[in-house]
Image (cartoon, rainbow, N blue to C red):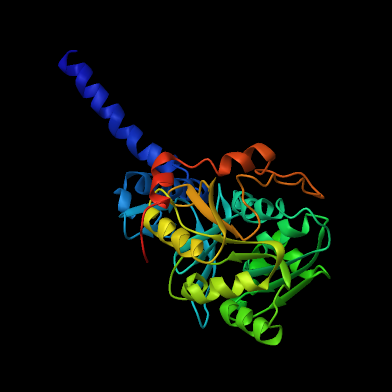
Length: 341
């Protein structure tokens, strides 16, 4: 361009600027809010990993140094009872989550795995009708709900130490705790080990229950009495002939020494002890175990009976039942070792 063209362009630009400023429309609130939303989204995405979702629930295993973060979860309720910190979180994927002292107990998404396996496996070895079942712990209601699914069950006594667990579960897991309102169920808030001892004092001959299920927190301060020799001996005495005791153990993958030690402890009390497994995705290792104990039921020679269930299962079936006792070789070998707690 020549000099005259450049001067003309500059003149036109100078006249256009003020005109455009006069015609500029004010920015709408929608535009402002949209811009803020985009900014917050980008800030969250670009933040360092340890700063993202700071409010999300994180479960940590101190021994292994492993942690699982439930991204996007939020705390719904928190109460410190006389015994422990009880909280309920909500996750977009896993639904409601019950935690105790920072340890995950159940989630809405996969609670059925744990509860079906702790309830249906022992019930399958009781062929008779009119069953009486004692549940020690189980304040979330899931185990009782599965027990009642078997038409042969006549009575369930639940002994839960912490009433706060039951109260919060009623608010956040009503589909499970509805079982507590069944007329066949009696809910008591007491120390489970003390309750068992008192039952034997009042009934020295025992034989009060066909099945005793210990659905407690993992081995620790408040659950410690439930893993004592005294409790195991007294729970055995409560059983009728052919009865079984089941208790939740630990992860064979991460706490194999604990599983082996408890199995050895139980074997000194019961004639037959069998460890079986389930795969619970939201538990830290995903691999969990239980112990089935009896003087009469030997899982190698006693075939499981058919359950009289009112509704279809989601995890348990006859094939899963049999396979649950097929333990990995490392676990099988460790169970014959001499670990002690």
